[in-house]
Length: 281
Image (cartoon, rainbow, N blue to C red; front, side, top):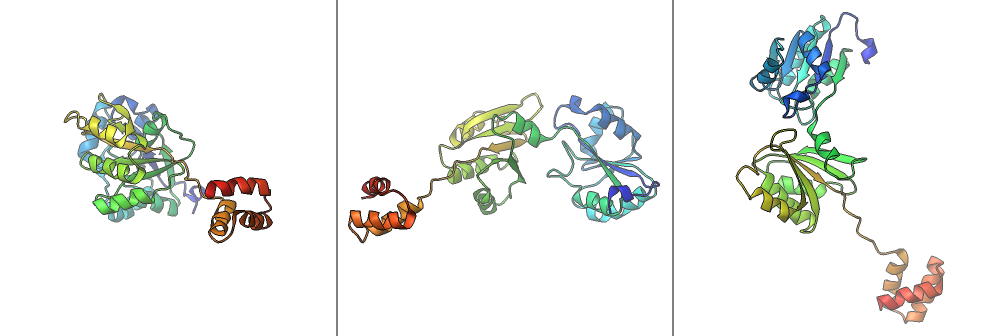
């Protein structure tokens, strides 16, 4: 069912982005919505209350997190259908981006309830746009698995033809960077963004060894929230059809005969194939 099918009596579910570190980044529209709705759904009410208090937002707050979302969504949908308005927020940034909310939004859409995004801060976009890496096409993969083998395999499976953005925690940042060095090589350079929009915001560009040295420089460097931005890798050159064919023929035939057969098969000039054959001999 589409949003247009929603009954005029139904309420609205607002997906409200909140600051990722700097409280001044709450938008005017987000502030207005949070004051006007009937209820605010917060990932962690204790975490969100200081922000709401700073903006004198006194709307009742309910908790909605990964452990109660499936069960609580049914109750919230029922209230929305009766005309209640809800605003969903996460601990920081845009809800649903590596945060709870998918089940509720999907259920609301299926019930014909209007779901309205209130855009704002998002760590992925903040890190990407200031990274100095191409951002016309990118892949966001969220948090990597906690277990070492699963994390290593996930990094290894990532497509390397576009910029990749991922999150990592304080506890695993060193191990993650070590994995990147093993998989991508010691000369591969990427970007680490830390404490975005906060007092100790940092962007660090370099090899895995460079970044590990920087993280180990002080106890505070390895603390905080991390975003890693990995550039695309140049595709490894693959042997041409002519080169592959010549390599096989040269193993069994004299050079001139190999070139003649390769030219008949590929329709390429003999002189070009001859030069290539000399390099392969």
